[in-house]
Image (tube, rainbow, N blue to C red; front, side, top):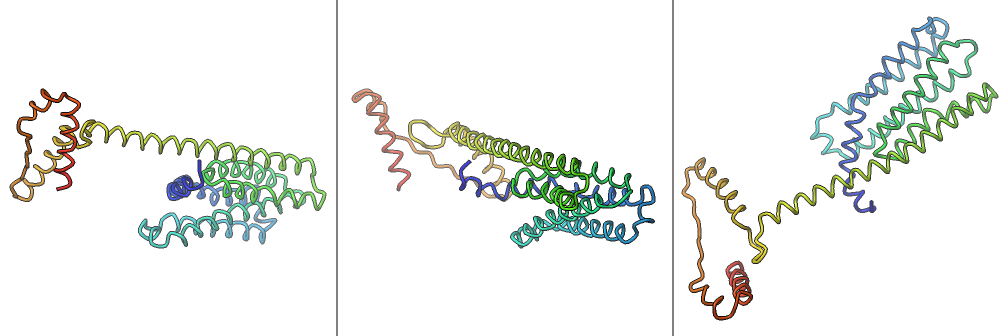
Length: 273
């Protein structure tokens, strides 16, 4: 799809992103607290648990507030709301990715590490698909989820085989995002093309091929609409009927092609006048 066509679909893409992520972030809050409570982790790591739980909750509540904003406010402050949407989404992935990276550094705490690894892989895959209409956001989301752990584990030389697996998973997610994004835009382009073709067919079915004026079908539709309008407003309708005298003689003397040309020019004069 051309750049100008993508720009025309920008608002549609933003609407899709909002719908895809409307309440998908709420599981973050629930799962965060479940992980903290599991195996009494919060008792052994109270400071980390408090910071982890309340920061994720605060970010998610902010995203919820954005989603619940009235549509007129989104339209009035469109640029600001969209910027806040992207920032809050990116903050979610970076915050979670940072806590996931820190969890890999903790000694013992095998249950917490396992739960964090499973949830991180799940959230990365879910966000990858949810934000695929915007490739950069999708890639950034996955990168924020997984990259901090790769960096931490590589620098501290902790569980390098797992770091390599996470790296391959990150690359795989990015490739999948790129492919899904192309398919999304192809589907969007096809949808818009079908809408245009449908409108063209609808218009052609109401246009006379010879004169280019609206035909009987369009007249019947307009008559029905105007009749209902006049009944509501208690006003008499008006209809103008035009006729070309002795038009058959033109066809008989000069042929139907001349008659068609005469008809088109007559219609053109009537329209202009």
